[in-house]
Length: 269
Image (cartoon, rainbow, N blue to C red; front, side, top):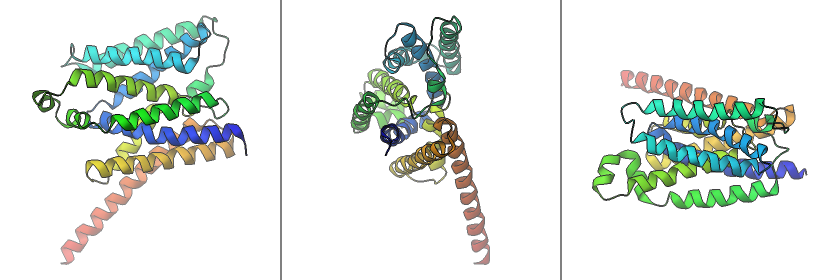
């Protein structure tokens, strides 16, 4: 019956749909840490937005998109030392955020962006997430992205414009992170991108099935985290991350038990 809870629920469900769709491509391309680096970069965007009295989510999207494109540009320069790019971006963006926040120029409380909050989700946030979800789902209809994920060199030979698609994908990642920080929070958004995908990979299914299972696990993690955080009076981001890890460990344990049981059945035969 609470309007803020309704908005939070709508945004949470849409985020739970979009994050694993983005995450499966990041994980399969071994770029999962890019999500963490851009999540921290969004803190700089929030700080800049609060400093200039702009919409923090929009400023986070602008700054995170810039850093996402910068990562893609530097990735071609540091092919053998790709992890250095993330260290550079993370250090630079966090440095900007800490400088602005600690200077006292920002009067607003940034805790809701760090940990997530159900109370801060507005109708504008709901509209932004709906638009993002539609654009993201439409983007995955293009087979070129799947080709780049599994074999980037072969995709280039086949004539796929890999650089342009990678730039577009970087902006999508930035947009996903920016609209997710309201509910999930900057500190744990990367877990929602990677952990449901990691859980679904334990099932050893095909690409399409893995994607669907990742969405299922993500929905469960987010909705359970939202409901429990409402009952406990805590930030939803932390509980969502904890539940994601618990679900991952539970699936690993179940799959291990199944392998042991199947092995014993073969021995009996």
